[in-house]
Length: 137
Picture 1 (cartoon, helix red, strand yellow):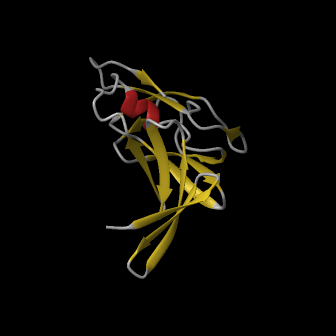
Picture 2: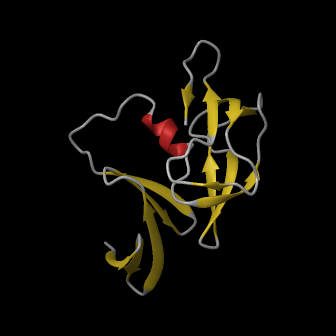
Picture 3: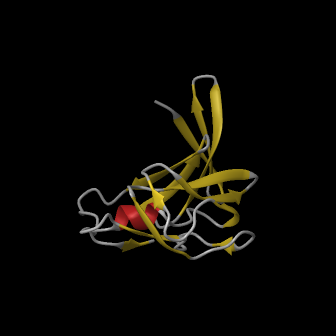
């Protein structure tokens, strides 16, 4: 188990034995985005509530913290697979990849290279495979 020490301004020191890392958190209290060791995690503290339909897509396809769009790796109409990097963000001298949470087709892109985006900002809209429903994030 790791020890977590708040440093202020959404920064935390995570110590696991002799290994120490900085973690950055942003977003609402019930679904905090945590950036640690090159990965983004969503910490859901609403344990008794069932997430609303589509919430995973919306969180996965939105900016987890204030960031600059470093690269747009997809185009409208492109077929993507779960885990593909769609958008590369840059924040606090770190790269934040926005990955496809599922297979689908890019319906729209709501950002461009160099743009500053805020937490929760919708960046990409994916369509489900034919016959499925679409979700915006």
